[in-house]
Image (cartoon, rainbow, N blue to C red; front, side):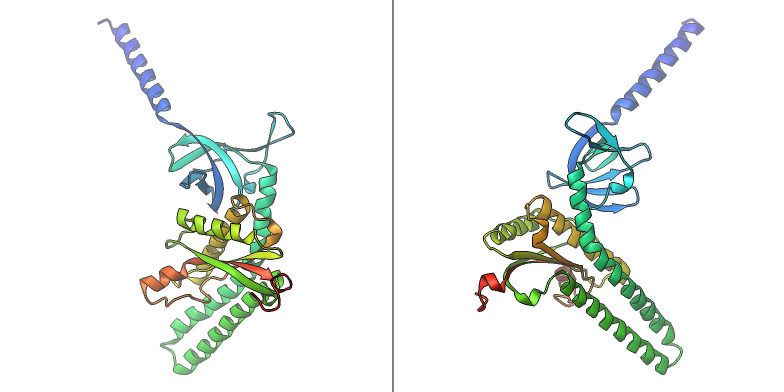
Length: 306
């Protein structure tokens, strides 16, 4: 074969290999709700009850429709917050997608912001106490070798911080609603794997059943509280219990169609009020939970609470 023909054949082979690599990256479309954001990585629970990791790059277009036509407006990536319902397109597979475009409705963004507004003040207030608590606990460990008097002093400071955390939780509950004026009419709990905030299909069904039951009452609210076990540090557990509560609130709002005004979220309770002992695997599994209760105003339910 002449030398020129061999060169042409080699160039064609390279072109075919490049084309094959480009076609190997599958195009993926999907839609769902953001349950967690970590940097440029989104955890999205899809409409098929699956979890997809969506990677956001500087080239990803984030947009929403404008008017009645097909025109779309591009916005900043900071709008991609937990609770936002979206559609995504990109390359990858059903487990992980590098997004080329992400599209959402402005009404869904407003709803996600309502969720954040309800939960973030509680999280910020408790996080400050958690940081102080953690610092004192570490100081206690360091002081053991020093002397018993210093250890006892640190224990007292830790106890004071624990009391402060309880007071914050109680004040938060009072801020959302005077729940002593409400009668419980039903409750359920969602449980989570270690470090996870994704709702299982079974827990979704129980929450949906409870939400449907609530619609039978006048003057009802649904109370949501998120918890964590004692594994890990307090600051991380505070954030994790917040993420779990957010996932339940988002499901109530977007899938169960519960009005915002009927949800109260004392929200992120971290390790407080354990349902079982954290000394066993079973007990820790019981503590990784979100409690959901239907409450009816006493004025509607009757003074007897029946």
